[in-house]
Image: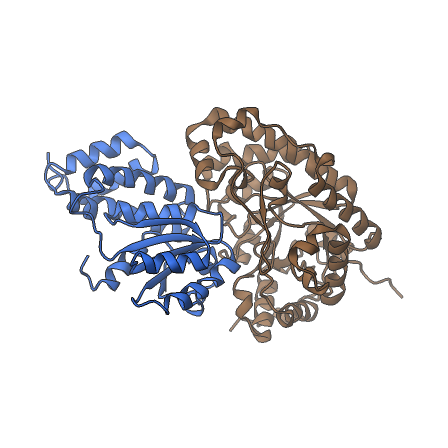
Length: 353
Length: 217
């Protein structure tokens, strides 16, 4: 009797562009963990034990293939002194930017990861997850890229002004953010993360033109990823990736998150086995899906990106809104367990309605 | 040589090129040249708005980035402010409009729409970042007829329903135009929250407002 394939083996095989036993499936439903524990969002993220328990329950319930140490995006800026605004029906959001004047970048100091109360909670959660996972499932760590962090540090409008009009200050901020990002990513890997998800929405061609990305986000990613001591996947958080896939592959990433605004099959083909693809279920629209919709969407994604491996089914943003019902999350899970089994023989003659 | 002699499409292509290059001096020169033969209102209608429409189309097609839309909108707003100062009688002050970001600190989308409408010659109040209840109160108190709401997060987008229900208690009808990422990723959401319309681009707001005023603007 052969041993069952673990989630970690499944994911590693897929990332190696081979077909495992079934399509790996990441259910990044962070806030549903709070609901599992019947806690408010603030209470849930106040203690690493809560997040660990939430992650374990979600993985057991929906039979998906990862655990995540991700708490909320603004944590990366909370460590710098930024404000976090909690809501009961959505993810914690960044508050008023703490860099009110670009000139203060000159006196900005990089926070020490291990001295930050909020970041230590994540590191503690990762250590606990590593113990609980026993090597069965990959554990995701998350960083906001140096190039995208200023949206929360100084506000998007001020950041674009900096990017276009003050190159010297922009470069200085990037160097500071790179130091933070590298230390933060490596601390997560050391604590137990298997891989790092590098959230970099500003690098998307949806946000900056490719020519500018090549001079900024891409160069910064190359410098940063080279110093991160583990595998790194990039996520553009619903932004398009197709026009810059070749540059992403050259920046050292192993996988890319795909927007629901793009055709998963076209992106997969363009990756040409240089990058695995993750995506691209529409988490916003998912609120209105029926279980039948969910099954059809999962089949469509598998049809487009499943053959040959190199594919992880997940949502397109890296976070499923809490308004998505458990019934739909369960329908997604059941669909991938039913239709994601390799070989994908059922695909012959299949065409989405 | 006047604008009409140069062929509007050639002038428009030059304007668009300068806009994408963020070349403020060339844009000012092109507007000055157009002013030799056109009124300020015609410069806006024939040169500026079509350029913004081209940017919006490019954004929809994935060939233009948000940063280009933002910088382009800002430059056009500056040009139009020079053509039509704020107190100019040619500014479109009716219907009375306001724009706000609902319960969120992501202000860029609102700034883009604000600049785009002002570049189109419209005057619009900026309520900034605001909670739903305050937005209802200010909208009623200031006699706003068209309210543009920008959101980034889904839970903020769902709060448009609270604004809609609150405004229903006011004496004057208010049209709501809702926009932002959640409305782009779910094309039914605007109906669900009680908005009167949505637009996938900033410049797309102009024909909607035009339609609501019966083409009077």
